[in-house]
Image 1: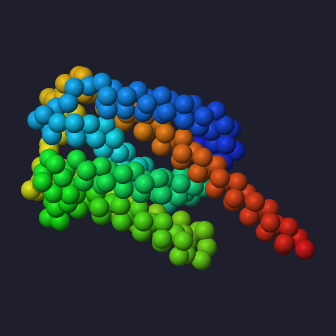
Image 2: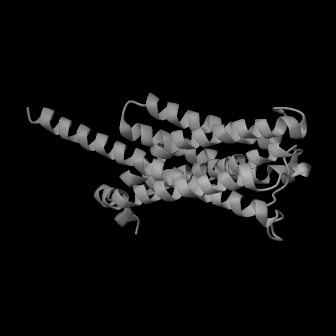
Length: 243
């Protein structure tokens, strides 16, 4: 199965129709979720009144930040073990997008936190610091790859960093339970089911799914560009070698 997906030509053929479909689905789901979340659902005074509406951007961004790092680490592992080129292309494509969504999660969290907690940022908060650390891991992955002399060295160094840094993802998830944190407990995915009322839950899930589709579409676009660049470089090298 890995061998089938590891073929760049098969990926290009698949993404010819899958990427546009993901763009369309992501746009529609985000639009509906934000329309419901920002203008339709009632404000929740317990969560800070109208400022709670930022959760329809913040929560999907936070989920996707963790999911994107997990995906980057998984693709790095696949490349490290089987040397599948498409896995390395995927890991490289995920990194800048993961950094973007992590930055969005941090920014919207600060906007929500100021009126709710009375502060933009808390340096000793385990959840905030672990997410910030993940943001720096994304940036470090990008910088490390750029500093390497060859593509193989870049892939290997990046894969090791991504896999080692993956330990931070469960730390983020359980940080509220393990350490002192201003951040609230989980209210969507819990052992007893969602604690959130359906009027908030469905727009939130729509927005989260939309962000996921949009992210997938952007990753595919990045991957297609990278594959074309590698093919062009290979052709250029062959032409130069042939004189």
